[in-house]
Amino acid sequence: MTTTKPSSTGSNEINPEHLLGDFKALMADAEALIKATASHEDGTIASIRSKAMDTLSNAKENLSNLEGSLSDKAKVVAESADEFVHRSPWEAVGVAAGLGLLIGLLIRRH
Image (cartoon, rainbow, N blue to C red):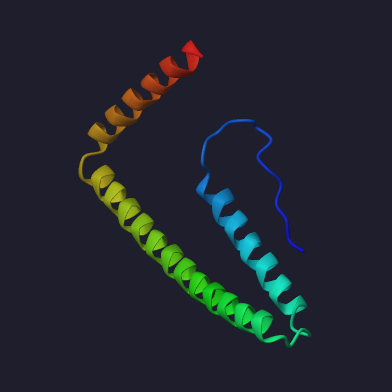
């Protein structure tokens, strides 16, 4: 059985990587549960098991597509940022310095 530990930071922030890992663990656990009931040939259990396997298969496919889509979008954003930095490096330095100052002020207040 695959399990993941909850975040030890105690914050209520949603971390996409942890969420994705938890979802994958849930899918693996559900698949293990479905396989464990394979010896039960009762009509009701067999139909539920079949439906659950179809749902898991669709969820895996959708998750794979989502990961690919997010990866593609991240690459586009990274390429755009790289292009901006090469096109106007001093503006990029100014934006980075401004963001650093803003983040520093916010952190200092907490």
